[in-house]
Every structure is written in structure tokens, then in C-alpha cells.
Length: 466
Image (tube, rainbow, N blue to C red; front, side):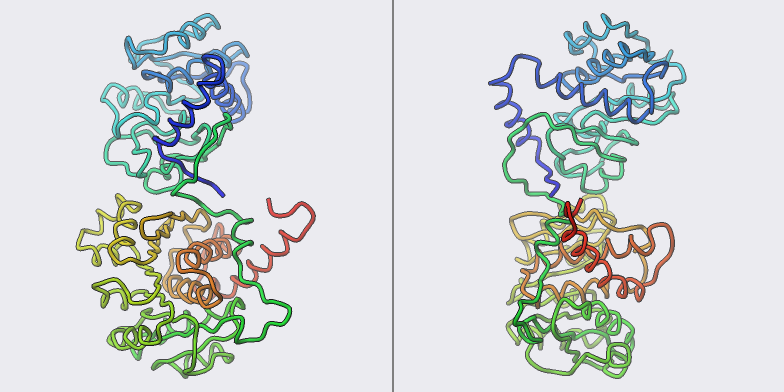
């Protein structure tokens, strides 16, 4: 599991380490990992041209010590000191002693890589004009030290000017900005350097294959179709029968024992999913996808069953208070904006903040779809999904996801975990069949059982999931 800790948590862990190691040891660990990562990124050290943009404090100190290491290995290293008299003194002395040069921002030369050591995790969002001016003069890949300067570390927001990195080398742990958009898009590839921090439980996490496999519902030796869970679908409408078909395809992924369908698209659903049956007892309902004018009644009927409910699309328009049962709400940014009474642009600029607001307001798990889908539980953890491909942004994919997550709820997962596991599986399935090319929602549904089998088989193989 990738855990993303807040600035406060990281600072507390660093203070604990600093109390028991020699002065400067923690920075040397970070700088050593940074220098190695830069060398690996370049593919060489000797003769490489490196430009350090050095801000005040420890972030600039990390860059200077790493620059000193690279200079000793034969790199041509220059530094622009943007921190003035707050430049890390010991780091600057080590850098100069290793042969590193200090230059003015207006005199920078063409380089192979720019090292962004301007602002660390303690900085406020945004960059000063002086720093942006230097960045604008150089056309080269950027390696960020800890975080891209200018992003909001704890929220993943980018309200001001900021660095866009090709590689971010972070220390001790991930931070929310490494996982959560829009800041995650500014990080490029994120490389984690272990510096020996003892960290508490994080509230922003990204599941990896081992955790997903551990959470997957698997049939007991004596299982039958009812004990494995029954998911009910009250989706689609006379106007949108395709949404019902796609939801049924997502639900019939093999992770539950039975799929029931109740609605006006029965003929279409049975034609596509002949194993689906009609009304009866279920362990979870999926409501709203393509529901149109039928969504309000379908939602009321689902709530009356007093089992967990997944609300998607049109069902969300009829929710103005916390649901009376455990629930998973699955809006995209526009739908969440309508639920919260804000502009869509506000949600897209601050998805973590708005997902948490919605989870608390509606006392339900909220799955906010996006490049980095977020699944927030009220007052608790937020799961960030890092699987998937841009090709997954296609009509009907949300219907398939709703059916899949509903099946996971019926199989026994609590709503927040059903959302986290379901979004991971859907993203993994999409990447397997269409990492670099188009796909349709129907193809996504067909790929889900294959992705699950591959996940389980890889875990059972010698060495397990990597």
C-alpha cells in the first residue's frame, strides 16, 4: 500500500529521527538518494550538465548536497541561489568544495536536467516570479526534490504557479500531492527514497495488488450462489436500456453468485446476460445508471429493502440527505458539483477536498471518478486509485464500474472498500487490454474477470505479486 502522509506527520517523524542520529545524517540520506535518482534519470553522470535551482532551507540543502555528489562524479553542475541569505550554508559549502559553480539566473546555459530545489514540503502554494523566470529560460527535463515547488502538499491542489516535473524524488513517504490530482499530474514519475522514518497510519492511501487480492471475495469450499452474494440492479430505463446492460455486464464479473435485474430493460439485459434473474432477495442494490425518470422510484424501492445501495448518475439527483442505509455514491465531477452546489471547476481544482466534504455531508462513501479516482469515507481514509489509462474515459465505463462495485458490496465488502477495490480492478483491466489504444465499455466488462484471474494467479505464483 502506498501511504501519503501530511506535512505535519512527516515533520514529527523527522524530529523523532533527528533526536537520535548525528546532525545532518537525515539530509545526507536524502541527498544520497536524490543524487542516485538523478544519475539514473540521466543514464550517466560524467559530463552531464546539471542546473540546480536552490531555494531556502532544507529543500535547497538536499539539492546542494546532491549537486556536490554529482560534481565529484564528473558532472558539470551549476546552481542558481534563489534563497538569498537563507541558503543552506553547510550544503553550499560542500557544493562549492566539490567544484560546483554558482551562476546568476539570467546567465543559465543549456543543460541536460534541471533540479527543482526551490520550495519543499513546508512551503506555501505558488512560486515567486524570479523562480518562474529562471524556469522559463531553460528547456530541459525537471527533477523535483521531494515535491514540485508551488503545489499544495497536503491537498493536491495547484492554485498558483508551480513546477511541472518529469521525475519527483521524495523522501520517507509519499505525500498527498504525489497521489491526488491535479498536483499528481505535476509530479511525473515519483521515486521514493527510504530515509528511516517511523510513520503513523495515513489517511490518504493507494491500494496495490497485494491489498486488492487480500480483499477480493473468494468462495468458501462449501459455497453456493446465495452465500456468495446476490446483487440487484435497478438501473436503465426505456430511454437508456444500454446503461442497464452495461451495469449487468459489470455485475456479472464472477465475484458474486447471482445478478438480479428489476426495471424496464429486462429483455435487453437477459439478451446480454442470460444468467441474470428477476426480483428477489439481494445483499446490495445498484441504482441510477441511465435511470432517467425511473430513478426516483427505483431509489425508494432499493432503500426500502434496507441493504447497502450504490447510487450512480440519475439516482444522485434525488439524494438530498444522508441515505438511510450504508451507501456508495459514485459521481463524476459535474455530478458532485451539483450535489454540493458548487461549480464543476471547483471540484476539478480540489477533488480531495470536495470528496471529503461530500462523504461527511451525506454520511456515505463517495467515489469521485477521474484520472485519479478518489474513494472517501466519512471522517476517515481516502483511497486513491492509480490504475487505469486515459482510454478508460469512454461512455458506459461508469455503468460497468457501478455494477462491479455493487457486486463487491453484495459479496460482503463495506462500501468504501468496494469502491476502492472496484476502481482498482477496472483500471487494471483497462490497462491490460488498452494501455495504448481505444476500448469500449463492453470490452472493459469482458476484461474484468480476466484481470481478476490474472491478479489471483500472480499472487499464487512463486514470489507473489510484485
